[in-house]
Length: 70
Image (cartoon, rainbow, N blue to C red; front, top):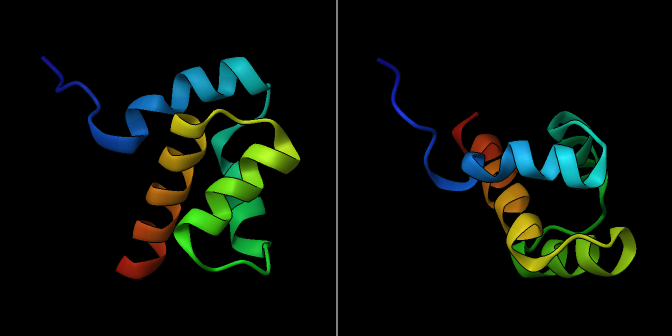
């Protein structure tokens, strides 16, 4: 039996389905953005790419956490 995905990654299947891009592309966009603060990135994804708040927040949180762990 596998554990259910929890946290921000739980949103990834619906993000890919709704917006038609793999999560890896969204993460690349976040990483190449000149913005660095969490809420600035969330607002940017919402205004420039049409993501909903929860989806944008999940992508930013997961991407920044990955980068901090490196």
